[in-house]
Length: 286
Ligand SMILES: NC(=O)c1ccc[n+]([C@@H]2O[C@H](COP(=O)([O-])OP(=O)(O)OC[C@H]3O[C@@H](n4cnc5c(N)ncnc54)[C@H](OP(=O)(O)O)[C@@H]3O)[C@@H](O)[C@H]2O)c1
Image 1 (cartoon, rainbow, N blue to C red):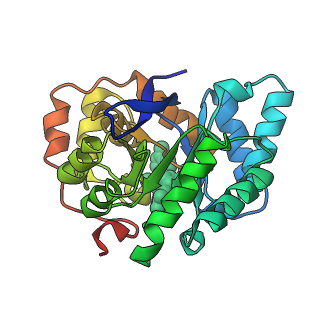
Image 2 (tube, rainbow, N blue to C red):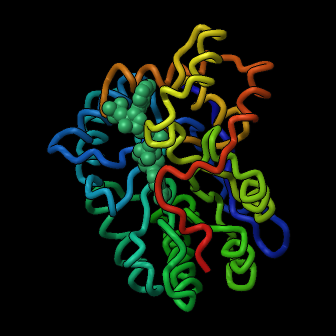
């Protein structure tokens, strides 16, 4: 259910290698802390028709994501081939080639999967000297088939640009905070310039902006909910996005954004940009 985008890795000869199809809308799983919360949310999402789940080793819930996937596959709700699973290498683990490969294996064990669909470096390694060997480890994971695609998260334009000097495969995705209040035109353009697709995290600004008056007015005009407008905007500007909800009703509501058609409202949404960062911002680190 829902639109897909083709992602791939730009190579020096200008080709796009290791391409794959990614469902543009997925479920985020950050801050699902209660025992069983993540498993229940992922199961509800898969039953509702989601085909993409975004997790990370740092969220400490890969095992619950894996349990939900296992149960969903067993009950015929989805097949592994239809499903797209993204996970991430923890920042403190981004220190070298072998460490990356070990941690990728650990994530696969946690998830109970033979491969993930997308493996991301959660944030640029703190020590710039670790960036190249970390990426070489990521490329090794790709070559070994432990992941169908590799990418980065929270990389600024300068981090991406530097990758040209050491990457055999440029990242397929840069996952960054994007929503109507943080549109980042320049960083989105820089991401596309290296052949990568933008994955918008925190499309609801962590829930901070769901009650925004201007957003409420637009949603009333369209006869949908404020959250649906914000999420659909991320899709309409060409991003993959992964709104988080632990609530079955809101999980379905967010998927319902696919029915929303933004027309002239796109101009009103463009005007909401105010460089509002709801989380962290490693993109601006050196
Ligand atoms: N790479 C990174 O550094 C990074 C950083 C942050 C996030 N992410 C990823 O992106 C995902 C999404 O970002 P996020 O979790 O930070 O924030 P988000 O998706 O922008 O917002 C989540 C918040 O909005 C609420 N919410 C969800 N749907 C709603 C609706 N329809 N109406 C009203 N409130 C709603 C949720 O509460 P309920 O659960 O109660 O519905 C939760 O409090 C994460 O879960 C994670 O997978 C990645």
